[in-house]
Every structure is written in structure tokens, then in C-alpha cells.
Length: 89
Image 1 (cartoon, rainbow, N blue to C red):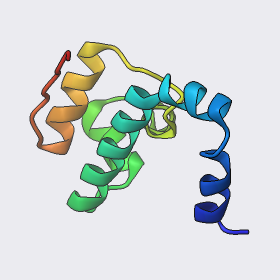
Image 2 (image 1 turned 180 degrees about the vertical axis):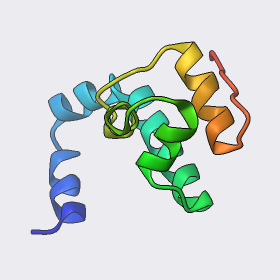
Image 3 (image 1 turned 30 degrees about the horizontal axis):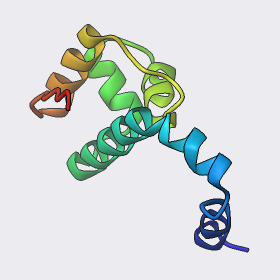
């Protein structure tokens, strides 16, 4: 079974959907960071070096399991050459 098939099966479970929605901001951040990093052709190590932090700090953000501070996000945005926008709905 590939990931898409497994995900489709998981999304039929209301308990899984409820829990996964609680982590949506973290995963949305992770997807955005990865997308922008790859678009620029940078490795995690290169971004970390530009931020004067560790590669593992970048990996934690990209895993979706860690929500960084606003200061970290500002530094990350600068290292990626992007703008940081925060929206509360």
C-alpha cells in the first residue's frame, strides 16, 4: 500500500481526522518551509548555516512536530528570501 492509499484509508476514520486537524498549522508550516527551501535549491544545512543554527533545528520545523518561535520564523524567512505573513482567522 502506498502513502496515498493509506492516507485515504486513514481519512475515513473520524477520530483520525479530528486529531490530524489539530496539527494542521504545524503541517502547513512544514510544507511551506520545505516547498520554499526546495524551490531555492537549498539543503537544510545551507539554511541552518545562513541562520546560524543547526540542521536539526530546520529538520524539526520541517517534520511538522515542532512549532518554532516568532523570532525563529523571522530568521527562517530571511534565510529563505521570503516574506513572513501571519494570519489569524
